[in-house]
Length: 238
Image (cartoon, rainbow, N blue to C red; front, side, top):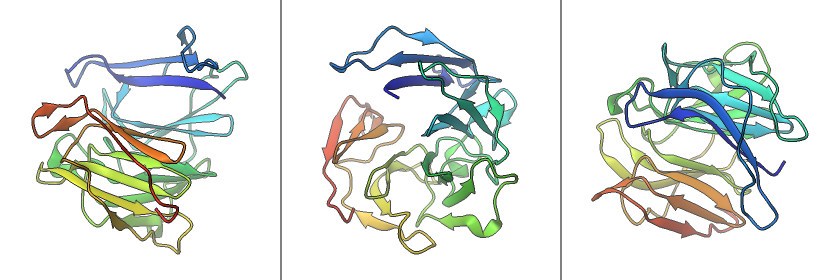
């Protein structure tokens, strides 16, 4: 709906300095942002979660808050002007808590990929949860699939080709440069394939898709915090 949302997150480097605030701004025709507005806050402070958008809906998935790691999914309806209605607990939930993971939605099917189960790289997981949103329960156990390796603090992006997993840290705390790809249209379970590596190992970064390209920004690289921006153009097959 041409609106940018900032949902919860950490206010400083302190892990406990977490907010429940939700802000939104309209994206103008020239690419600039309109004024920021406050809307309905999350029910509790939350960080390291994921936000996905469906038609007329925002869903906040997992994360960590004052009561620890969460498997809950919170849902809010989006009004025509971009404002949100109050948050409600979705009937569905993740089978286990996840933070610093990647989430994508295809129709009403949510993919929750990798991530940490608790704070600390040793809890990095290789699970891929497939959950039907708005359906009661945490999904059938057969809806759990697997990455080739455990990873958290990575970036993910959902393009018209499929799902990309980029960099991150493994369950030994080592930064990764590897890139994985899977298409939800393929036969189940998801078949993850290796793609060309990132130019360097990186974690804690963000990624987005722009047209036919994938953009990777910031993060922690071999020399510490990075201001680099990497771009790639995937082929139609991924």
